[in-house]
Image (cartoon, rainbow, N blue to C red; front, side):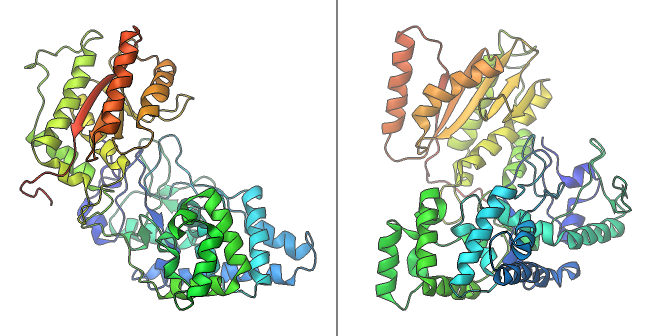
Length: 474
């Protein structure tokens, strides 16, 4: 099972929670970000001045740009330098496999930011809060980079918070490199750890939560209609698309009153951290469910006559794990966990993590190796189960609502199999749509390939549509 900070640091998860620390997973990515808007009214003392630091940093950048007379003068160069951010590693937000550092902002993105900032100033706007919103319309800037910029600016506060909590909980620390800074560390890798407070985290920063253009210029319907026409699509599309971002940027810069209204409404939006209790996007509950599955619904491979696991039966072993996953969802009411409290389907990544956690428990008990998203040079594979070098089964999980369902089957898996030298593969599809059009198409493609004598993945369909059942929610 993927380890959490509490495990590797040998400290109670309840104590970390009491100190407000996000008990992050090690080598499993989370989609949580430090939201700069949550720095405004922090409860933790180390972050009392963090928002002021953030605003001052970008206020200085805007001042430098405003003082610049021509591009590449000393003010311009100084602003350019300040808009580049080095990676600040080891902040415990949950790590992507093979990438334990953040997303640096290098010269190319910094140059674009500088040009956009210059245009914003020319439009008569000098409020540094615009840098909290910049990800809405600047290509290459998303929630991850906004978070990383914030981390870079408040890193001293994060370190002080980590040191205080570590001292109070008697967590071992040591000096990092040639510095005098002491931090807790991962005893398995020796890498330092910087804690992240839960009160600063969101699954999507508040600045990115704009569903439509009606949230801005709400008192001016003519202006709203003009901007809607200019961006061509909905506000939500514009903020999530490269093409849309370009159009939205053009619309905002050519209509400064819209940008001013956006800033005004952003300041008025409620600012609350991620709800870890209800866990709406399933950031942590999958791990709790995985442990429950292994305890309450154990798999005994010996009883199933699947032990010892060999190259001859590893496919059946993997299918058995997939079938157990299906049984939990279809027969034990666990389909409920695929949906949030509002009944909305959670991101496909949640279903993948849930399978990973459940499968990992069974693999550990049976001397199998389960790896997630290995970098095979061809893209990301969801899972790979191995028993020795010559026995490999790959598993890919998708929702039937995924627009790449057929493409994933026809294009991705053969590429993965070649890269991973897999003996066979399983395409695990969770039916999340009312109609079965995509599944029927998948079966048709599968049959056509089989009729041609081609080597094809096994297809397993799980009915993950909402059913009437007793609630299993925590």
